[in-house]
Length: 144
Image 1: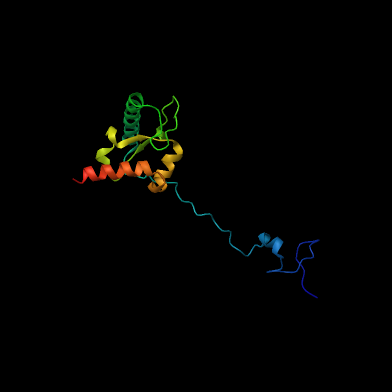
Image 2: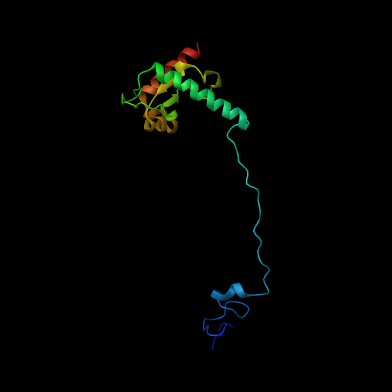
């Protein structure tokens, strides 16, 4: 006859040291596992300090507002109306800020697009043929 669990009323077979699988947590011969405490660190994408990022965001918003007031509120790719509120997702840097930081505040480097087109441009520029053609044209002019 197989051994049964040491807990009264439990008829499950023994798994180890007199206890079944269900009651293994009651064992006293095991050392309790301590949770490893690790500090929570915020990893930033850039080496900018918080103050520099806030300043850049403020400058971006002012720059975007100038563009919003000077252009029609229509998507560059689809021709869709963007509305009356200037959301930051509508402003797409054709030449990426990370690769071409010197063109971050050039108005010719910004196109107004819907958020769907903006996300497509970030995942794969081939999904937005007009933006890609404009990007190729800009790169051609820069490399001259």
